[in-house]
Length: 125
Image (cartoon, rainbow, N blue to C red; front, side, top):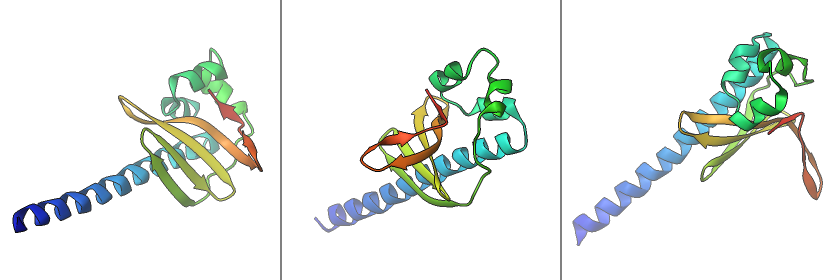
């Protein structure tokens, strides 16, 4: 019985680390997206977009994403994972991500809260 308790505790601790790792990974993707846009690297920015988001930007995603009025990257102030979705706050901006087979991808960016209404996002899929 004692081993069972120890095993359960170890699994819980490992699970907490896993959630933290996932939120750190989501934050890194959100930061890399905004950094790529700020550095005018449209190919890198499009490389971390969710397929539907890249499609909505248009045929030439690498060029189109650079024309969007996205903010310069700020330090991450909050990163939360909700199952297969994540929310990352960088200063006053919010980036939403989804988990895809290749890892986290940006679903919406340049998002600002609108009170009780949904976020208003510059880029979304």
